[in-house]
Length: 88
Image 1: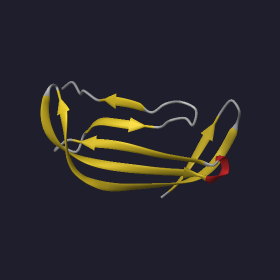
Image 2: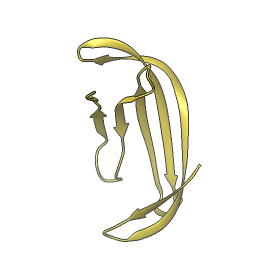
Image 3: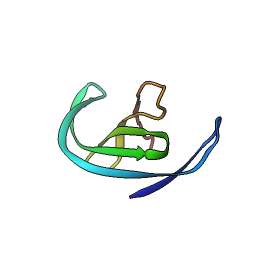
Image 4: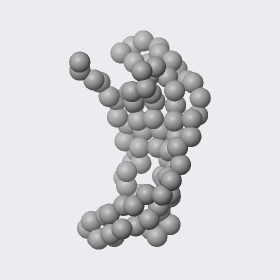
């Protein structure tokens, strides 16, 4: 799908990009020191105007909730890994 992004400092407004999300299969991960089965999705983002490509990974539990993500949010920063814990 097509995406639009606005960046600041320096300004780069209304950049157009492409986003693709693919199902990468069922994998196992540890959550709270226990192995669980999750679905892995890979998001590919390309913004040609600034020659940037990014690959992000998302792990979803059996309820369809994202429980972990690995994201590249800036070309000059390392990837970040986020673990999500929902309180009901």
